[in-house]
Length: 196
Image (tube, rainbow, N blue to C red; front, side, top):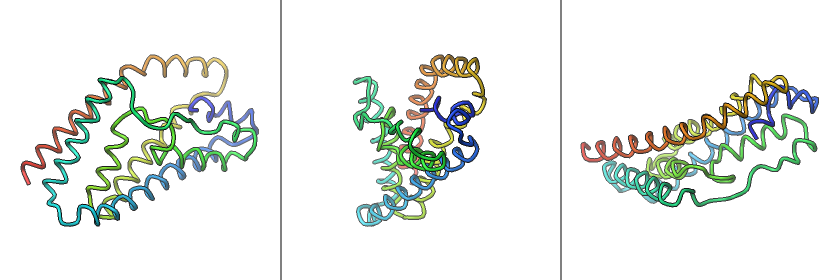
């Protein structure tokens, strides 16, 4: 989908890339924010009387278990659907930008490629506070939405081909960096849990 919402693709559909991208980012950030608030609210009921140390330990354990399961299975359980690409031909750019962004920002309504996605929502839940959940969800949704900016330089066929080559070359290093970050976050959460 990243290769669809580019200046080249939007121009071919007579849409404005900037407008579509702004609505995409708005959708992703809003969906993340809403999910974070909801998780924090539910977490206040579930984890309200649980100490911060225990909640951090739960997040650390979830990160570690998710990492082990992901590496062992080679895939993360979850939906196998992508966004409906027919929207590109049916709706205006701002509509599919908002819709695609919201689906991506929610994190779990399309293909889940990292167990860290689930850990984000568990962290918002374990925060046990709607405002903290809001911060976590907004950050996660905004970062996921920002991936659309990777296609900003795709203005012609050659740059589209180069974009696909770059994305293919980066797939493995980015996956390894994500797994390393997940290990680091699990360690930090555990250290923080013990230190509280």
